[in-house]
Amino acid sequence: MAGFFCGALIAGLLCAFAVLGGCATAPAAPPTDPVVAFAAIPLNGPGKPRLQRADEALNPASVMKLITTYAALDLLGPAFRWNTWLYTDGHQAGDVLHGNLYLVSGGDPSLSRERLWSMLDALRGQGIRQIQGDLVLDGSYLRLPDVWPGFDDDGDNPHAPYLALPHPLLSQLNLVQVRAEADAGVIRTAMTPALPGVTLVDNLRVGPPLARPETDDAPMARCPRSGALIGLPRQNDAGEWQIPLDGVLPEGCGVRRHHVLGAADEHTAATVRHIWRGLGGEISGVYRTGQLPAGSRLVAATTSADLVTVIRDINKHSNNVMTQQLFLTLGAQYRQAGDSDDLMAARRVMREWLAHKGLDVDSIIVDNGSGLSRSERVSPQQLTVLLAQAWRSPWAAEFASSLPLTGIDGSMRTRGRDIAGHGHIKTGSLRDVRAVAGYLRDQRGTTWAVAAIINDADARRHQWRLDQWLNDIVVSR
Image (cartoon, rainbow, N blue to C red; front, side, top):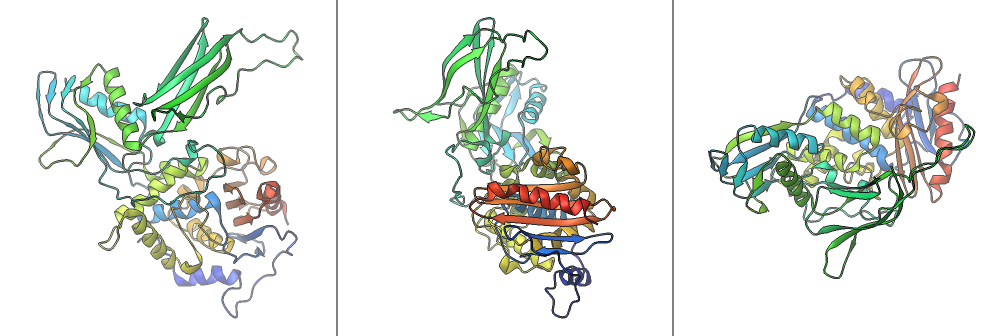
């Protein structure tokens, strides 16, 4: 395991928090806001540590992604990539492939429709049009537990995109896109991919085009918001899924919405079939899951972007399913004989890695690595110790740049505008949780490692306190 820090550095960091006996520490800022637990330490310039309930283990929500992504950089390396392959056990005669087509997944958290298309287009470029066999999906690279840990969701939409679950055969984040457009007096609807057993119930009506304002001061009429008019999936008495579309869609407007619906393997199989048909191809057999037989021939492949790019997508946009898939990858890459599945392996790997980093692993709980959990725990102090180590690691630039820029992009796009560009800050939110953590540069040019967490029934109402705290660090002298 590369990148572990020497004991002297860890001791120095912990000394700043007065957790080692006999350490002389700078005075902390007075605890003016008991709702917020926080820690802030200067990394490269003047400043005094700011601490309040800093050693209290709390639920960090999506700030937990910082631990998972830093561990991934350290254990997998920034150039790590995932592969997906196409094999066949048959032979080609003319434009017909006599045999099965195997899609073998390497657990890629970022496998997209575009990359599937590129791989299938390469197969089509070999002159193959018809596949006289089955489409077989092999997801044996990842080993999932029999039951994935449940999550008590805040809302009433079990199909929300952030609730997608990891899967060895994940593609397109297991999202189904439903869209509708009003054009030339006609409503055009589509679902991508077209899943078997799922239908659109279209009760949309075309409305008149939106009128332009008569004066420059008049507000411009707007099309319905993106997710409007498209309802939640529901099952009929026959067990079939239906997605309702109701309301008036003005001429020239369109709406779209994403749902998590169906098993990941069904979703990927439907996507492959849809793309292959679009390329003029045909698959005569059925879809099934299975393992690649020995002696099969590789016919096409696709490779993901590097890990640095993937963790940027994870941290900027707080993607839960990609983080959980990354967490499982850690388990798969370091799997041992005693690990019953890759979730257990990942938890073990994370515990060992944190211990090597000099942290008290008994007070840190890593459930699935994404923060979408009621049980995950870490203290602000522990977060800033890790952030300080990451800042001095070989992956410092890659890690910091994966975090949202205050007031500019990602989950901080509309927050911290008064300190725009002064910080790379990851946010976290659950029903009773609000959190921020990352790096700030103050007006004197000092970089700080910061972490602040609120665990409170009114956490949402207190979120402004976190933003004010970040602002105070930037402008303090």
